[in-house]
Image 1 (cartoon, rainbow over the protein chains, first blue to last red):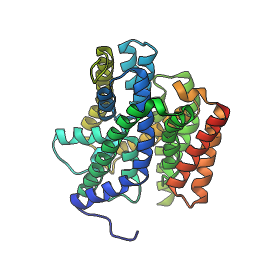
Image 2 (cartoon, rainbow over the protein chains, first blue to last red; image 1 turned 135 degrees about the vertical axis):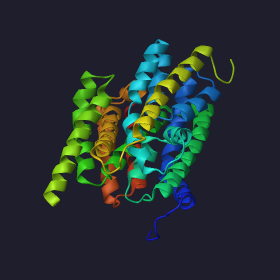
Image 3 (cartoon, chains in turn orange, blue; image 1 turned 180 degrees about the vertical axis):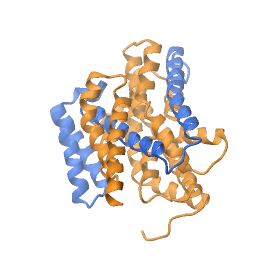
Image 4 (cartoon, chains in turn brown, green; image 1 turned 90 degrees about the horizontal axis):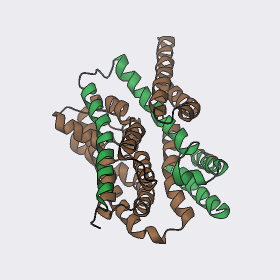
Length: 238
Length: 112
């Protein structure tokens, strides 16, 4: 595609919906069908399963919640575990929000609610629009499309849970990991590359010894390594 | 049973929603005065990449629940197939994800 990048909100919105319609939609159909089936087996109602997708909007945390509930864990323990699993939304919101054009606090909270690992990664790609208002449109269109598809897929998975063969159900949970892996391989820039490699490698021992807070410790370590690599790259270039 | 299931399940979802939204909200508040050219903003972007990378390690190498019933060699093998297909197809995400997931399903079916 050689077309110029969109400059305004409307153009960004269209571009966002268009990019979400391809692979992100397919991945969401797969992974959220898997979650719907899991929610069904866990004993959630259909409405609750769909609501949990829209309102939590972070699959790893949703899976933690469903599995702990099925295991009979205490509500406080579940809330803490889900909070820990979804702590990533904090640094992600900090690094996404300033690149979208303004708006009131409610509009910003709405964008933060729409944000997922996929929407964040797509807005950070070099192909995403650059002006703040086009980026706002792009994120709104992309994430809105994703959330709609995910809600429908959760319902479909919930209704079809009984007919899903076990290997397929497991593969649907795996699809998300595979997508995240390739998205991270596709990141550009020295700092991001160092952050990703450090995060993957250091993430193994850190998450082994700190199952609760491991992700945020991994973020601090990998983020600092990426920051330093980026800074030394800049000073070497200047 | 209503459309929402037992009350306990609804309470668990509500608590999980709150625990998740908290982080999004704190991020929005902290981001309000941040300059996108500043060092703090850059550090947070790299930290986000690292957190997602750590999440990947967790999903692939240290999964919990049902995924943990499939051996590490299947999970890593399928990931390698996905990465290889991604590069062989000149960085086509669809080909990569489809190959990785399909090989995972086949291996899980054959071994399970």
